[in-house]
Image (cartoon, rainbow, N blue to C red; front, side):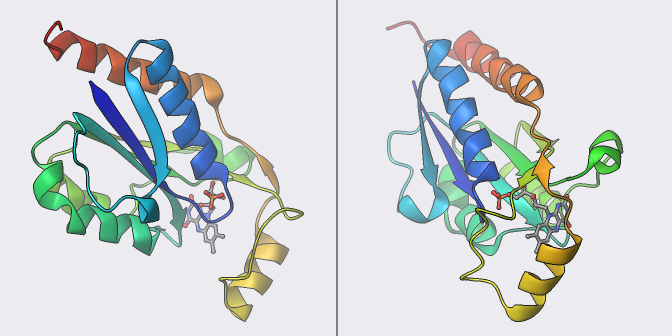
Length: 173
Ligand SMILES: Cc1cc2nc3c(=O)[nH]c(=O)nc-3n(C[C@H](O)[C@H](O)[C@H](O)COP(=O)(O)O)c2cc1C
């Protein structure tokens, strides 16, 4: 059983969640590896795929959306789970969050087993704005709440549910 946990991350928070999910799966005895979406050209050998993206202005990052459309035929053949990393700030993380805009289309396209929104993180010191325009750089650096709201217990619980679902259907070697 090989699970790919692929992620699109601008500043690293989503990558951290993806790596944590892979760690939990490995601890449960599932072979799992985390990769940036841009590093995978095919899904050969994957028995399941978890795909996560940071949320920007209500949307998944373009690289993550492109990944789903490019690999839709392969993704329809295996169980897929999606996650989004978004809300920042104490109030936002306590409020119900809408799905990013793409998720409705993804449900039709690849029938994911689930989609989870996890709270995110933003660290002004380490944020790399080299790929951002001036407006994004200015708005984000001035307006975005700074801190790490990632909920590792919620992440572990979700990854554990995935492991349980996969192990229940695995054919013994
Ligand atoms: C330009 C920009 C727009 C954002 N828009 C949203 C948004 O609409 N909804 C949301 O929940 N989070 C939004 N965020 C917060 C990030 O998605 C969150 O900090 C995420 O954890 C960052 O992940 P990353 O470090 O992997 O890039 C935005 C962040 C940036 C930089």
